[in-house]
Length: 255
Ligand SMILES: [Fe+2]
Image (cartoon, rainbow, N blue to C red):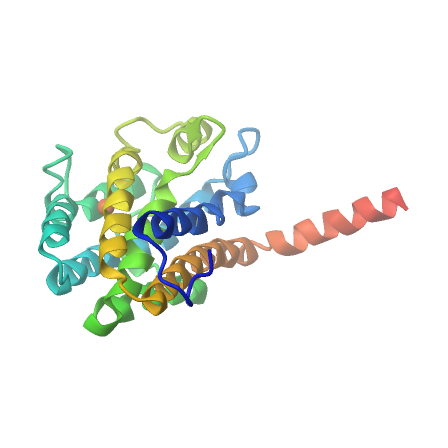
């Protein structure tokens, strides 16, 4: 499949978008071995990582609102309305506004409202926020915003380690209840459908080889920016240097 030169049929384009997403599993980032270490729970790391995630949550509804507002295809506009309604009210999942769900999780791990509200994005986190905002607000770049948000971002919650979802492992390591983890379990379920909707929307929307190539590129870039956000936290805690030292020690032993 040569994307960007010839127009792929919808099925092949969907397969390519999905495989681009699956090629970047962010759970492979070394940060997670520190975050999910059952023998060594690290609450400071969990809190910091969560507050970076919260910076994303705060902007998510704006992306969906813009994608709904500018959606040129009525069938997909209706699907986005459902997505937006759930984000705002939580009524489809019988829960709450999704920002409030995240705030519940933040409280459950011992972060005060003040600490939550004064946390700022690392520059890597801000880069991910900004990259998605621009095309969502520009009808000319709609397909790029849709690919970045509806496929790459909604797709981030679908990963599992073995047969366990990421939040189940977090719950075990940090002693959290199902209620504390509702933000994650709601997304785990819903985002499967949201990614399917995103793929269907893009398959209908991208009618030129260039649009297809730009959508694929947006999925790739967004996934890399998610990876970059985890890298930012990893470096903030000095794990990059720690792992480097470990690796060079291992080499010395082997030599
Ligand atoms: Fe959400």
